[in-house]
Length: 212
Ligand code: AR6
Image 1 (cartoon, rainbow, N blue to C red):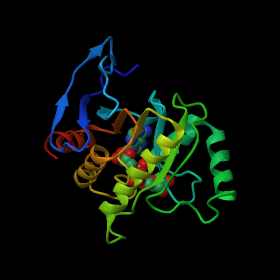
Image 2 (cartoon, rainbow, N blue to C red):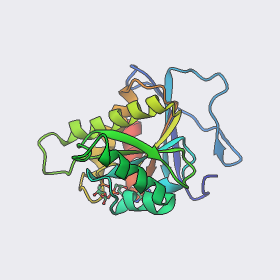
Image 3 (cartoon, rainbow, N blue to C red):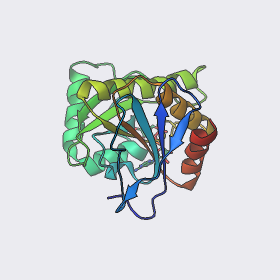
Image 4 (cartoon, rainbow, N blue to C red):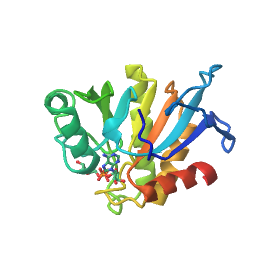
């Protein structure tokens, strides 16, 4: 159940029809419903001001670091709320497929432990100001995460505003990259929910969705 104070903005983005989107408000008893005649080629983009650890999407995306061993911000919140099985799974990934850590822009999935979601998709955003191509790397985080979601069969995915905290990416710029990338992505994911921490982050994504 979404908190009453949480702000929402829904858009169904038609693939390859950039600039054409429909705002929908189909709230029923506090929940959002997909249209009954749902088009499988559409990805609904929703904005929510809230806490990503509370989302009921199939997967939640973690703004991780290359070690995959946890940290602050979203990463700390997800590990705290989901419990130690997430870290156990991350250690296993480091032991097997990623001994040198997860490169920026890549994504891997683990259990979501005690979260409402089934999976956590860990991705590593760029540290703003340290790379020549932050937008490309940030876009890659979203594409990689959606590719992992497709491999898992996830139909709904919640994203935080990757890189906009500790990693210093200006929220307005990050919002435009994130929205544009998800709008243009080829994915079977039916709902992408950006879960924004605070009014400023929500406003930046709202602006990117409306005017981007
Ligand atoms: N739900 C939704 N958004 C949140 C939450 C939450 N519970 N908590 C913070 N945010 P950050 P980064 C917002 O720092 O910039 C970690 O230490 C926050 O306000 O979590 O990619 C990792 O281990 C900001 O807008 O991620 C890495 O070392 C956004 O989420 C590093 O931080 C992202 O902030 C990654 O930095």
